Amino acid sequence: MTDDKAILAVDIGGTKTLVALVRASGVVGEVTVPTRREDGPDRWLEAALVAAGPWRGRFSGIGLAVTGFVRDGRWSAMNPATLGIPPDYPLVSRVEALFSRPAIAVNDAQAAAWGEHALGAGQGEDLVFLTISTGIGGGIVLNGRLREGLAGHFGLTTEGEDGDLLEDRVSGRWMAAEARRHGQAADARQVFASAAMGEAWAMDIVAASARRVARLCRNIQLALDPPRIVLGGGIGLAEGVIDRVRALMPPLGPVAPVPVCRAELGVRAGILGVADMARIAFSGAGR
Ligand code: BMX
Image 1 (cartoon, protein in one colour):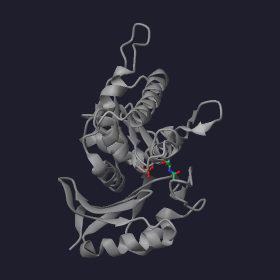
Image 2 (image 1 turned 90 degrees about the horizontal axis):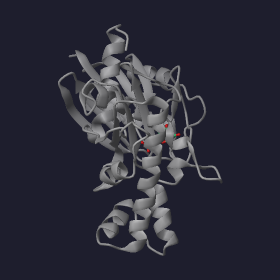
Image 3 (image 1 turned 135 degrees about the vertical axis):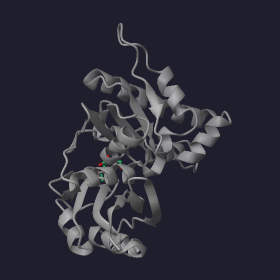
């Protein structure tokens, strides 16, 4: 039987896709499937449809939180290294045709920002959310409203003279590449473990990444002066990262550095956020 209040929430990231049945009270059930990068969007959606099989007919609408740029229901890659989405893929119309239910779509980090604002560390207040994982995503909630479109794509800001993308100089991908440059075969998790054991090469990588995140937070404070920045993602939540970032943020003249706090919803921020947005959209209320 259709549950009017249940939403099917689908979070498509660069490496995995989380499919969940979400009610106002929280996540009822969830399944994670790999995002097979080589398959393309039609297949990614079919995989989500299969994963949602147990909940067929139990949801009234669908919320999609996806890595990449979303406008008017169409989906494109900003950084194809994160996921190679073809330009202007008609995401919402495809999903509505596949699932026979109304759908909305929003960028994954923007959805997570809304989740943290409404249900997590934001406590209903304005915030900037940053997720530091494969890439760097972000979302901005100001005056109680989520900014959509390009807003929050902080990973695409540039770093240094050569104009590298910030997410290519901070994220998990960069940490692994830096480790290789030091002759170490280590992923981001192993870099953190080696840094904790006092290995200099790993400590340098962790410190450089935290310095760049601190600089980004400072620039965000100067641009938007939000009451808080909420940090999430595998790197953002790794042991000691938030403390380092805080320590690297001096006051701005007479103004204290913006408080940086931990994301509370973890990997579910995107699905909880987009489910909340879908519920609001389908009830006809504004966000
Ligand atoms: C990239 C960009 C953002 C996304 C961010 C984090 C693409 C495909 N993605 O900056 O839209 O929010 O990565 O994505 O251009 P994640 O998959 O690492 O969470």
